Image (tube, rainbow, N blue to C red; front, side):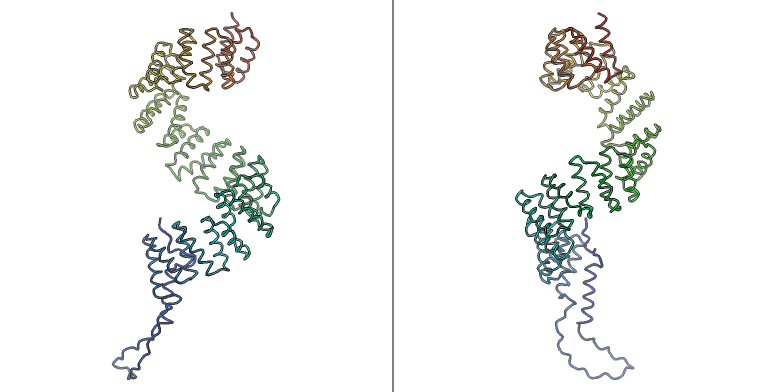
Length: 584
């Protein structure tokens, strides 16, 4: 980054220096040299002796100062900021000129040189003690240096001279200090507030420090008691955020809406309102606010993306497509825009466009989720050949994601074509030999395809390589228990899994089930109730109901089954369990 060393509101210091130099030569320079006589010129008067000229003064500065300032400007243009800063600081002390001091302070702040910045701000106040701008600059630098009492005194001087204050900056600086310093600054603010009760920024700064100190109730009470703060945008926003923290979201929204009627061009306030509306699930109202923001900033990528997502959430797929298309046009490499544009196309009934948008998502955080969407869409349309070709190309183009791509394709195929899923799993294992996730998937597919030996073989292979693989231990133990085979071995396997993952409700369910198979009904009931409380799904409900049934508590079992059926009405497991038991 280059320092904007030549920038100033009116003209560059370099131009000003040159101007002073030229004007200095014209006013204070040596007398003009007479022209040499020509052949036809009249006779020249005799030469008179010219007195020794007085020392030349170039405008307001000496020749050495002008040279140093010019050197500073040139150094800044050549990225020699250290030389530029040294020259400015040196000349600020030498000349005590307000313009040079301000320039030295500007360069110090740009470079993050805090000590020179503090030095220049202090010098400025020494040269111009009644200048509110100097006092304000000193207050800010003193606050950065941790001199909070002096900073507060300087800002109080600005306030007394009716200058623009920045108590909020002092407050934020104080918030990072110890409790004693925060309390001292707070007391100073409160005293000033009593002296200047109509000063909105003092009320705001006090509330801000209270909020930063974790005293949100007090901050909110202060703002509620001083409606004068509503004349300042920042105070309105702080007030609304405090209301949200206290659960008064609707009041906060109303306050921001009123604030925007008073300050319709405040982008930050409108953005805060829009986000608050989203958090309140009022997507239609949020879309209105974001639309106004986009109208003010038509090529703002983040606003377009957010507005597209809000419309997508509210069900307006057409509007979502429009805004997300614009966002994707502005930044074709933006994977977030492309991914959500695909979702918008899908909602709008344009599946081919959705596929195209998702395929444009490259190697990013959205890559795998986009491929999951592609796989689901193609499977829904039974385009398995296209899915295979597309994923094969992706594995070739993105080899670091090849395993995950195999897993996505296999998981999608399991529901509609387990044999093809098995073929793809075997293909993946040729490349990723002995990968535990692939082996586990193949084991589950083997069970689904009626191959119990294949299931047991793969699970034992995983356990042999990873003795602490709780998922494989539990799967093998539950399979044996469900078949009512080798129950002592099943118990040992599940207990090992339970020791590794005691909070996993699936393992707790397995342990309850194997105890049921072993005839330990009370232990089985206790474990299954624990699992059902943590994870009330249809399989755990089926197991718990069966244990209750065999304890003679049939109505209680029916109640459990009915409750689970209401949560998962399409589950066949409870119906089959109930029919099997009632048929006996």
